[in-house]
Image (cartoon, rainbow, N blue to C red; front, side):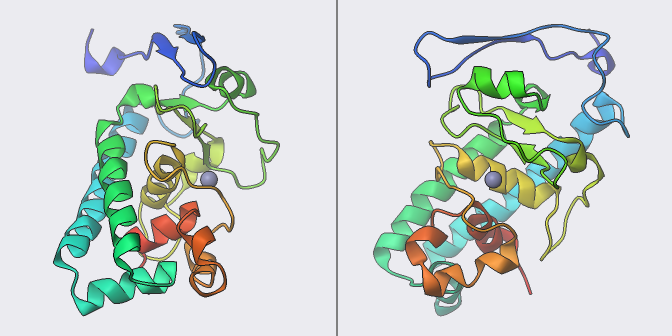
Length: 218
Ligand SMILES: [Zn+2]
């Protein structure tokens, strides 16, 4: 089968519900993931930005190894301190995050449906149409499925300080329990910054704090 005709099809096993399986049906009549591009264009776009996300995470891993005053200040800015404990948590989490991002393939990206989210072991969110761009089910470490909402399709691909495809991939991958297992305490990178001072434990547990630490440049 040529790359152009590539169709995601397979069975995914989740680890939330023992022995549960998700059948991913081959449906050639299904609409494309994004209405404004073909699935081939979507795959090329998302994989290019996956690579970009990995590059940014790898940069932060180098920071943590180098651990200059500037690197420590960046960690303190986003997470409230630059303790050795925090450095180790970030090193462990970012190393896992880089691995999960690097392993993302076209089959990891699916069009959002409530049905799929239930199969993956989570409760569908009710935020459809209110700016949600993507969803994952944190316990879904078996398939690392990223559910794509239509708003994702028209996002800017990259920005140093605003939501983008790159920041979204980092945000979503940080939710998986085998990376940081983050929550959404506060949305948007810049709005997450104050958490470092007000509630550092939440900052390290907040998806947009992780995304902000990785890519934000004021
Ligand atoms: Zn989220």
